[in-house]
Length: 495
Image 1 (cartoon, rainbow, N blue to C red):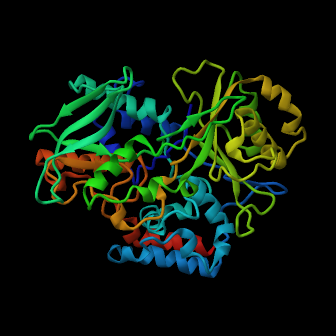
Image 2 (image 1 turned 90 degrees about the horizontal axis):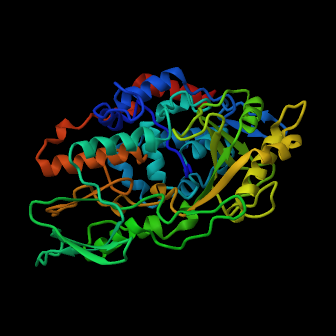
Image 3 (image 1 turned 120 degrees about the horizontal axis):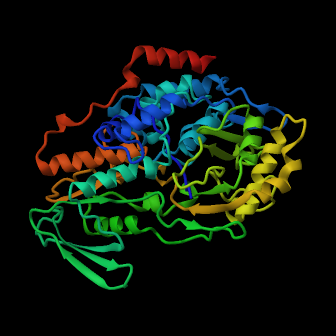
């Protein structure tokens, strides 16, 4: 199962790569995890030749961003807005920001941007501004994703497993099968003084309640939300059921924020599914027939391509066309356990309540088989022939081992509309031993993009409690202040 994927970029993921340079690879002896990724990526560079596809057109020229002058002006204002004025975008959605220029949402630029990063129209304009600053160089390469780097295998086996192995060798004791359900805080006359004195847990194997005391010398570092919380799986013949759970990590965050008044507002991220939900699917086949058909239609070898299909008819509330679905075709094998001839690819629907163009039902209600049929139908609309992929549908279906749909209510929650005060700082004011990490914490200037945000926030927490000066953090590059990068972006914007 690949519920989703996060692309890397060496130019901005400086904290992650610094960490992986200190950790041995799980699969490549003699290399660090960072060297492994750089070696693989150098041998298999990303160059997407079919970033956008549309019925009646085939491969769309994504190099033409399709921006009008008003869109260029509004994007330039985001890029030029200094950090000190960012709060002007508190509680402003991307739809709000472009409300007087809705043509923006039918530009090739938006089709590529929303599907590259999983932004939605109701996502935060404040976060979009941060991306405009840190990823401004993507303007010149977004149509082929030349700046995207990938790991040799899926990120669990290429990033997480090496970290786990390293920590265990260093004596770290990792306890699973426990769910922390509540806090015990020190009683204090000062109601903003935060000291954790214990954790209430449930043993998920035995359902027994447990309590772990926290002494004065122990730091509690808490990831206060997860974009895969409350995810559910279906199968080839069953859609993924909708799980209404608020989420394990976010529920614990809510209990802390209810107790204190400076720990953010979890409801902004976990009580608005319409702004954050999407569904994905993982397809496994026993041969390369389908993979080869996709390669023929997109004119590119398998290898980390991102292909997005533009709707034939208007599908948005504004009566505009939009991307219906996207697929990611990785270099094979994507999992170390794949058999020699097996293929694994994944795809996703950013707006799961919309209806399919091939299967007339909401994506969220589709089985794995129906999601695959929707994909074959989208590919058939852009197939240059002479034999259309739809003529091979039965043969493709015969090759399927499974197609597993996944519903994720919070997949884009990290981008939800917010004010700066809605996320706690890594070290909240007056906290003596509690720190927050992950995608739902406020870090100055940093954009929120999973791996790097998690590493940097974790290092800030660890450095703080260990007494290490913050000057030891890797310096964040400021491409928004690089004149050459800005000039190249401006030229591309006006092409």
